Amino acid sequence: MSAKVGDLVKWYELYADEIVKDAGTGLVMNHRGINYFNGKYENKLYHIYRFKHSDIMTFIDRNLERIGE
Image (tube, rainbow, N blue to C red; front, side):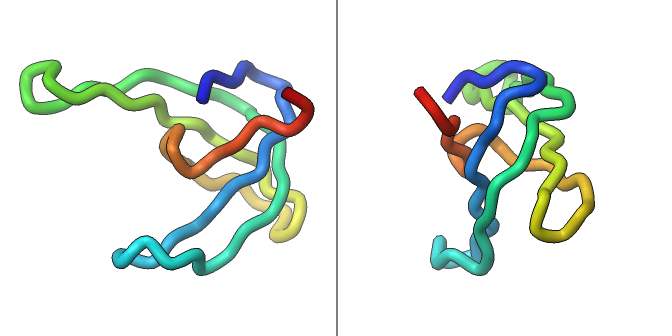
């Protein structure tokens, strides 16, 4: 998923075994790329304002879906 600042997204908070713990909609506030294991893996981190909880949480790209694609 590739989103930019201001995009509406659906976020998913997961337990360790990939079962959905919580979900809702939010707004992309900021994002940045990360890589680890000497660049072998790359992800994007997104700071999302969650409407449901009125807070900001960080999610990786696989736990987000853009709304209105």
